[in-house]
Amino acid sequence: MASQTVIVTGAESGIGAACAEAFGATGARVAVLFHSDQAAADVTAEAVRKAGGEAMTVQAEVNEEASVDQAFGAVERQWGPADVLVNSAGLNMAGVNVRDMTLTQWRRMIDTDLTGAFLTSRRFLTGRGEATGDATILQISSIHAFAVRAGGADYCAAKGGLSNLVRTLAIEEAARGVRVNAIEPGMILTPMNAKAQTDLDYRHKLEQNIPMRRAGNASEVADLAVFLASDKARYITGARMVVDGGLSLLQAVGA
Image (tube, rainbow, N blue to C red):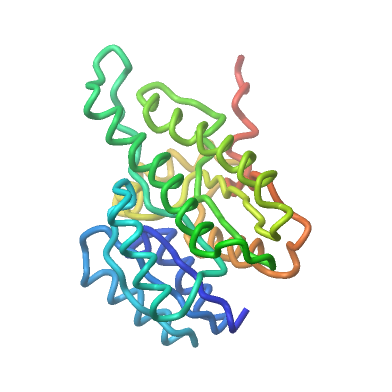
């Protein structure tokens, strides 16, 4: 994978940052796309370099077509068309029931977590033109694509839509050698779960719902991302890989 160019969105923190570093460890060229925190993106880029890869940072608003085009253009001018896209940029659920949710909140979530994935995936594909050969799109989704929870209609709808985007892209692009898969994490210790990182009692309470009795680490998601982008996964496309310590297996417990 040392010759690959990898674009990671939302790479300034959490799963995105872990994916960027993990691909760096393969010797890849990694474009660290970030929303607003240049300093955090620089930290990720340095981690990529220390791991053995090359890195560049690019600001991008994934829900804005012009911004996505500009960001991908910057990467292509530096390194040529990308071989791997990891879509990790996203927002967490609002925690607001539908009856109380504003249209602004709904649109903000859909625009970022679903439309953003559409725009970046489309730009990745058009940047490659009609080229054939191994390429990979990975969508960082969530177990909430299928395991819904109250207060999460915006997030669950976005991730559910992402599942069908993955499957549709997989059949559309298979003949060109582009594999498209989703990773669906459960409870992962990232800034999205800041309280679980700082409040150990709160975290321990939540971990009792996980058969493995612990939350996951971003690096465990990143390891799967690297595998899915490698030759070892060359016959896997349209798949949804759950990484949750067994959490989603307990949906019907007590019912």
